[in-house]
Every structure is written in C-alpha cells, then in structure tokens.
Image (cartoon, rainbow, N blue to C red; front, top):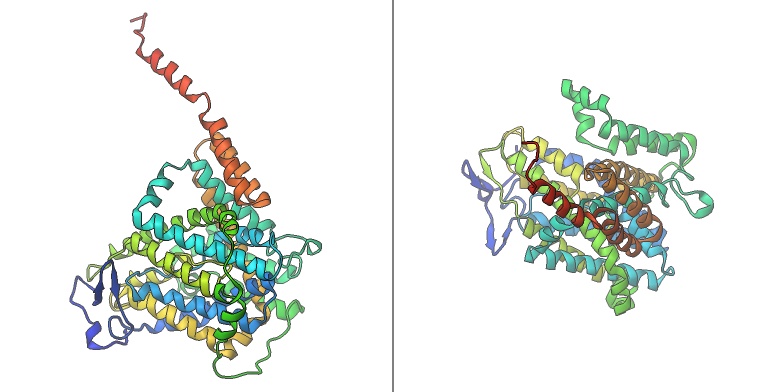
Length: 471
C-alpha cells in the first residue's frame, strides 16, 4: 500500500495527478504519487552501485573521497529530475560508454586538464541530447546509420570493458580489476552472470519460488555482496570500519571551487572539438537505452488498465540533456548522465505488472527508489560498510555491462560482412579511441558493404528484366 496524500489518488484508467508545464508534468512525492515501501528497501541495497562512481572519480582525478562523494550525491539528486518532470523510468549512467570515457580522459594529464576534458565531453553530450532529441533528428540519424557501425560502437564498449583498467588489464599497465581482486571478482562475476544471463537461472525463474524471485529482483547486487564477503575472507579488501554516524555533509563549496567549470575555468574550443566523437559514441549508446526504457514501460502499462502512462522520448532526451549540462558545468562525472538504469527499471516494472495492490503508480516505484537512493548515499554507516569494496563493485559492473554489449552487438548484425566490419570498428574504437573508430567505421562500411554493390544491383535488375528464352 502506497503512503500518500488524498491529492495523489487517481480514478481508474486516469493519469497520475500532476501540474502541467508544457511537455513536462510536475509530480511531487506524497502530493502527486505515493511512496512505495518495497522500493525504499531495494534502495538500501542498490545504492552501492551508484556509490561505486566515487572510485572512478578518485582513480581518474586523484580527489579525496569526501569530494568524490559530494559529486556522486549531486549526480544522484539529479536522477529525481525525471520523476519530478514526468518521466517514469529510472535513469542511470551511460554505462557501456564508461570504459571508452575512461580511455578518452586518460589521454589528458591528471588535474585541471583532465577535468576540463570531462567538462567538455559531458556538456557536449548534453547538447546532443537537447538538439537531436527535441528536433527529432536523433531517431532519423540512427535509423539511417548502418547496423554494422552501430554494432561496432557497442562492441567497442564491450572490448574496452573487458580489456580495460577495471577489467583484465595487467597490474603493470595500471589495471585495478582482476589484477588486484582475482578471487573476489571471479566469484562476483560467476554469481552475477548466473543470475543475469544463465539459461539455468532463467529456467529456475520460470518454475517460480520465493527465494529465486528475490534473487531475480536484485539483479547484480547478490554478486556484489558475494564478492564483498569473499574479499573480506581472503584479505583482498579490509573489513569495514564505521567511525562516523549520522549523515554526510556535502562539500559543495569545495567542489565548486576546485572541480567545476566556474572554479577551474571552462575548456577551450579545441577540447570541445576533440570531445565530439566520444560524445557521439555516448549518445548512440544512450539512445538505445531510451528505446529499451520506453519498451519496458509500455509493455508494463499494457497489463494495467487502471493507469495511463505518458511515455515521451522527447521529454527523456530533454531531461538527460539538462542533467548532463548541469552536471558538466558544476560537477562533471565520468559515468555521464544516461536515460536508463535497465536493471531497476525492469525490476520496478515487473512489480508494477502485479497490479494496483502491489504498486499504485509507476511513479511511486521509480520516484521512491531514486529519493531513497540519494538518502542512502548520505548515510555514513552504510557508506562505510561498502567503501572497502567499491573498486570490486565498479569492476563487476563493468564486466556485466561488457557481457551485455557483446550479445547486443551480435544481434544487431545480419551478414558476415556486417559482423566483420563491426568487429574491426569495435577493436579500433577500444584501442585507438572514438575518433579513429568512427572514421574507420565509415570507410570500412563504404568499402566492404557499399562499394560496387550499385553496379551489381543494376546488373541484377537488367537480368531480371530480360525475357526468359526458354519460355
């Protein structure tokens, strides 16, 4: 039963109450949707995934944990923009782009230069969301883009994930994934891959069972917890030490002075130009997430006649654009601001399908989860428990995403020529970066898939037009 004020109640088949504002629909917790207790509980476990972004920031910029935590908290708060302005999905990182983003940033010197490069990248991503999304050009461009190039981008993200810093890169080359946590990461990968991808677990879910349903609901969290326990047991991570109680006091002033565009200065035009190919790659990945999120919500809504859900991809684009612009200027983040946390959107949608008695409104589920998640990030005892294993959580997240990238990329290709082009693009993208990857992709697509085909098609049409002499 959702906890809400009378103003949040709706008639059967109607849309959840809101305050109209153009394309946006303002909704506030309690006032326009109820707070759902199951999502409160989920957030207490799932917040560790978002918290793990502190590790990216510390690794890439060498900043103190308190500064990284402030940046992550700011990022977590912006997630709530989606439900406040009428978007029902649970937003997340542009996860598949993270290894490529790390590689892009690594080309710049640690310190101000690297921060400016991230500002340039995230602001450019925000502009792409706003311009391509609001004009409707995004779908048109991606519709005409060859499947081999799109598959190559996704494949490159997967290769970068597995071979990169948080994957299987050697310790001598700076790897902090398998090289540093071989036992715990192996256990975590086994658990997470089984729960998320294994045929055996899918068959177990089909048969039902309360314990299986619980594991299915929490996605990769059991993998993180399993890896954590093993890391503590074998000494790959120190036991947590809770030395502070209460809530974290964010250091927004320090972040503004030492990390924001206003504090350190804004990037040069050349940096924005250099960031454009990587921004395009990130947007291609993110647009696929928008389509997935829309499909998940629409399918869930088909089973609920009691609520009408207005799922508008243009609104999602605008909100992602605004989030990236705000974060890019004030507190840029390596994970970027994506449109979808697929695991949680699916989890909430599945519970929503169970009927109004299970979840009154989709906004209650997603809104409650996002609010509780950033509260958990502020609660110091919870942060202290998971802090020692954040590098493992990051590595596990990256590996799970890499697996998904591989099978998605393969599904996007239909012919051997497309698979070959996608494979070469992916390898170049992962090794040499977005600029060379996209340039090579266009050239390869033209040479392998297009060059000479027009003459063949003309000849084929002419042969088909000739009368059959044997008739």
